[in-house]
Amino acid sequence: MTLVVHPFPPVYNAVSRVLILGTMPSPVSRAEAFYYAHPRNRFWPVIAAVFDEPPPLSKEDRIRFALERRIAIWDVLASCVIGGAADHTIKSPEPNDFVPLLHATKITHVFTTGSKAFALYTRLCLPRMGLAATPLPSTSPANQRMSFADLVAAYRAIKAATETIP
Image (cartoon, rainbow, N blue to C red; front, side, top):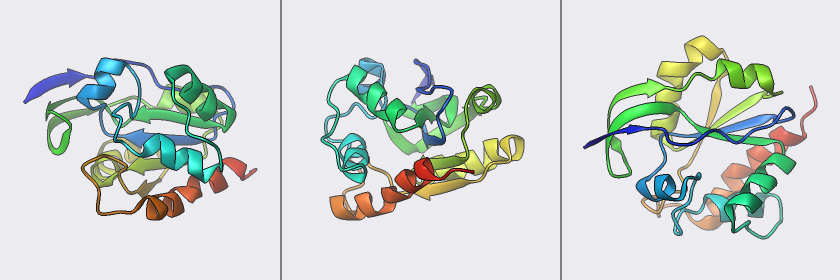
């Protein structure tokens, strides 16, 4: 078990409408200094399929992909004690402060990737933010019980939210 402090900033810009939250970057993502960097994590292929695009491969292309689609990406936690990448081992969770991000964007929807991210967001962040999250299944290599097609179907809610105009 290791104390991990979130090592890199969120991805967002002033027109971001959707915020996608994981729990805490995995050791591979921390080493690569970017979200969902494990080569077997299906996040980038899934989100690309939702938008009928090829998966972005480089960090720069992933940032551009997200921002062009009005997607912000961050994690629920600013720090925690965790064993490797195993969400079920999380202890002493400290949430990120989302209020400045909300003030700097047009975010109207929050999605969480995985049940632990949803539970932590609901318990630690929802009372302060007042913006309920929609839980999505994890794209982690540890979650192989969902097919790629089922993940894409679940994540289509993201595209719908980016296209909704209040």
